Image 1 (cartoon, rainbow, N blue to C red):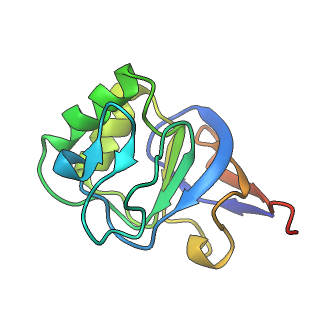
Image 2 (cartoon, one colour):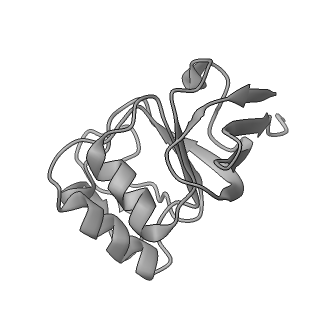
Length: 137
């Protein structure tokens, strides 16, 4: 499946999807040393976003979240790419300062066609998201 989305940054990233229907709070909500979501009650609590394509509605919280994301990036624990339903400043700045490919406002609801483990390719240069469904057992 191939859909259009609005680029926030440039670049291309490919990897397995990790999907959350909840906003993410990077300050205190993510361990930057391992990329593990540690916000109590979050649907990704205990899971790592490191090296994955992170699909979530938007960010939330403090502007220091960009520095937490940057710390994760420097440690190799940040996502490879980001798809947001609606980007907000903290996540956009995070992607910009780390060169992480990011798109927003996909033409279709990403929660209806992207699942955990799907192979996702973001081409933020062209505003294209490609999804290859993971093999189901």
